[in-house]
Length: 284
Image (cartoon, rainbow, N blue to C red; front, side):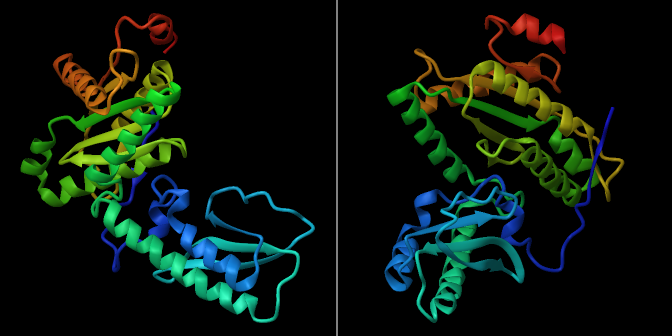
């Protein structure tokens, strides 16, 4: 079985914002006011933000482009770009000033919406996103699933190895889960050792993602705590005609998480009556 080794040594300074941008970042409209000011100030036709690791947004090759790096705590985490037929002298300097504002806005967003320990969304922020996904399902029927998981016997880890080890486990789990998720999936810390993953997908896809998460969590080794083993139990629920609200989805996913624990832990529990589930499990 392949293992993932995670280095969870304490840093001399807080983790830079760039460490958490890949999965949880502000909504696109978060910067609308700054974009408006850029367009009005330097005459840009349109403005984009490219986070490190993202593909570069398409642009008209016949337009001039100015760009300025987005920097937080001394490290670049993205690029601010402005496009126009022609820029006047001094536009580049002004754009650099707006890049500072964007970085500050992102830092403020992260402070308000990200869990300090794990860099997953806070419970409040996650529930807000889950509510929006539920509303989208109600309007358009877009698939929406929730994976809830927590770590098995986590109290024993704290009691046996200390709270520093427990914190390292939580950080490592959040890190490897974030690495495994698609860019459209959202991880939140619901409290203690319990997490939620919002997946805009049908039940079979969500079950497949949940199984990958279960496997990668079990295989994770923390560099400074190699002797600490841990697993997770996961419950998966998907919105449908009878489970069409945020609270109903949470209740069902939580019930299935409890069933996964009752069934022996370190397993995924979804809808046992789902067509095609037997074939998928047989293939595994």
